[in-house]
Length: 173
Image (cartoon, rainbow, N blue to C red; front, side, top):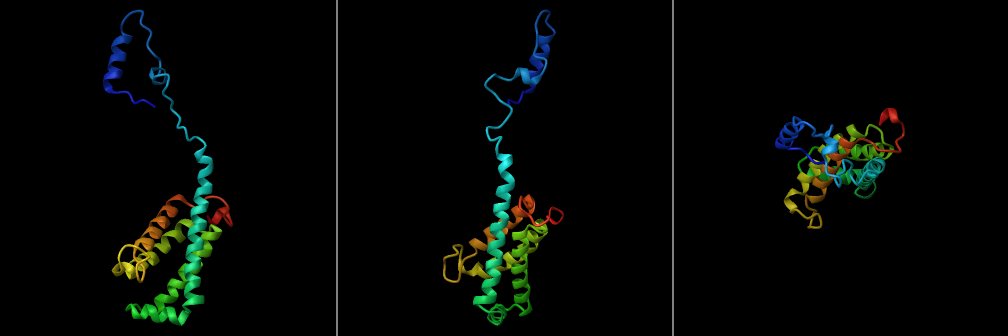
């Protein structure tokens, strides 16, 4: 869509005062014939809910996988010990496991997606803090802060977008 400058509107008004001169009755008629007002991506809105769903399910799988990793691989006592070695109280490990497992399941089901996404942000910021001293790249020894920060931003985007399709119950989405 071509935006009209003030001078275009002014010139149109001057021309319209001349006798026998027909002026476009709407801004749409003043546009060049090759200009269109619609985007070439008009089909995109129908795909958007599916893209939102893909993001939600991906974030849910990642959160659930990280929570279960702490339970099944590192074990709960091992995770508590690790948190305490960082100077954090041991109960924070239980809160983190509950947030990741519960939040992952909630995201997979599409339950309170916006709130769950926002609730997981502090967990990921904590993970970024843990990895801060290891550098940027997550493949560094001990893991860098790049992945937790990206994950945090993805959760914020999800909170803004909502649930998408395929939720347990629309009322709880």
